[in-house]
Length: 462
View 1 (spheres, rainbow, N blue to C red):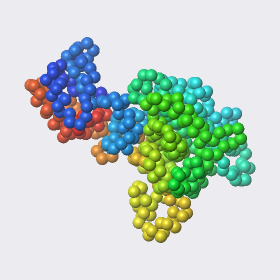
View 2 (view 1 turned 90 degrees about the vertical axis):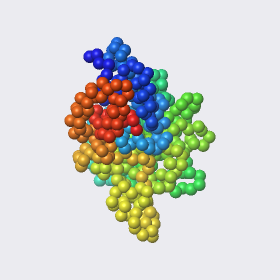
View 3 (view 1 turned 60 degrees about the vertical axis):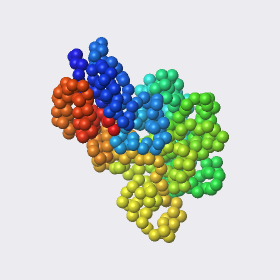
View 4 (view 1 turned 90 degrees about the horizontal axis):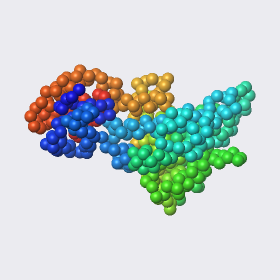
């Protein structure tokens, strides 16, 4: 259909198709006071050459530090920035691949190992065109003592060492150009074996070992079972910590002259391991190394450490984005939070108002944790059965818009009647002479921002 004056809409961005004149083009640019516009085409249909398509979609390669948390995601979470949403979902796919690769079959001889070789792992999980390659498989060792009564259970598999994730590096030139840097991803799955569940139950805080603690003190503490899984090893195998340090050292040496980022992501237990891994990397390699930005994307992760752990994490520049389902109990354990800056529930707020002497006694019990990083809070509306599933988290991220105006994109369909009226009105608006139509359109959109929620539009005139 040939139409030189029309409204142009996609599910990726909002754009206005205007007559191909400098007057309209410059007028539109004057309307923008905060965000940059990009000319993405010169026609409203293939071969027409009659229109300009203008949108506010910035290149990922230019904005990647924002999405990695250089500004602590200020202004990007509520409402959720569309490009950040895509990045979160992209990293979520790497976590999904960690689950897909793991052999859950207890009757299999390859139980708790990776089902695929490194060369075909991503292809088998549907990420063959991601532009990344697997460079290392990761294994975690459980050192918990198995109760005698559990050993009597027939056919109960209690492996000590299990495949828990992998390290990938972006090696595709086009993808590196799109991302704006070479990206390294460490992805962890969640709890999958009985031994790991037993480690999860060891929830008291414990001091970090000397090689992980800052020089000035040994105050940082983390969950006992988590630290055990990260640092334990069996004969003939490196610990998860040793493997991570070895790989990161090699990566920093190989790509020392390139723009680089390290993104660590995981779900549930994997989310906690991701936070501890980031802490270890920034503590180990900050001295004498030009360390790239280290970012954690945590899906449904439990608490990891105390307030001192959080302070040291922030001091080293680690950026943590916790994607949290408010209906998921795993994100509210272990222990409790008594720091006024951390309280996120009524129970924690009540604890924070207790007398100081009582709070001191509680801290001595090693059950007082602290939340880390920035939180993207979602809600599955009381669906307890699936509230902790990774697929639920990715679905919520994919549909979340804003906590105030329209929490889910599906809810935005309620404004469909208004949208239809708006589309009809646009035909009249763009028949106005000179730039009055554009000015009228802008005024209308500024008064009705809900229109942008429909079909995932962004708001270009902020």
